[in-house]
Amino acid sequence: MQTDADSLSRLAENTSRYACYSRSAGGLSLVIGGLLCLATFVVGATVELTPALRYALAGAPLLWLLSKELLRAFYYQRAGAARERLSGKQRRMHLWMVAYLAAMSLLIIAGVAWTAGARAWQWPGIAYVAIVAAMPLVAARWFWSVGDFLVGVLLVCQAAVVIVGLHYPWYWILLAALYAAIAITTGWREHRDYLRLRDELGLSNRSHGRGAEA
Image (tube, rainbow, N blue to C red; front, side, top):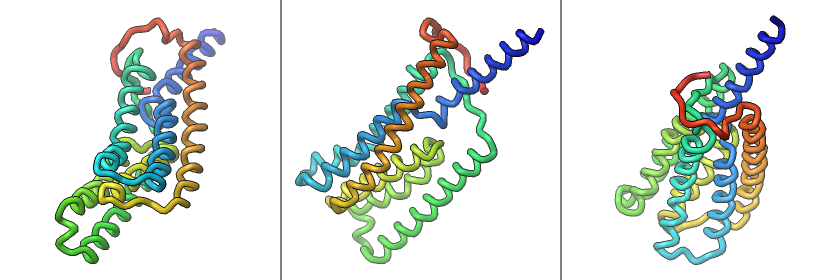
């Protein structure tokens, strides 16, 4: 009887660990985000920004978000969708991140509208405003961990600046490197945890299943 209880408890724990990869655990997507973060700041500060390069760098956040969705759907949760149940602390942190970014976005847009006037609503100024305005919306949908927040904010801010032909000073590379190191280390640890979990649950040989919440 005790053995059955222990087995059920272990299964519930592993299911909860598996469900984390639907939200708060990024795994390899955090590694990709960290590498993109560092690469975009290095390139932006050291290479002449041609129009093609500007748009390529501005697309880095989209590439990162795409990696998150593809890895979640076809790798980390390929045995079936299991939605993570967030704790009260996680929900408060997420709400704080979204509220903070919404406030910052409003201040930035108001500042640009005040200083740039009509130019803020012409290309590429309108692209800058659109990217800044999208940041809290992106955070509400995809930023579920500190790593997401660090990498995501830098990538989106970099995209907004580079789309208008500007770039952050070289010393921002140091901040990008720090955040990238945090994201890469965290993401690789999460990926290693998933590999162990996959072996414990035998997920390698499972096909897609029904969605669930754990």
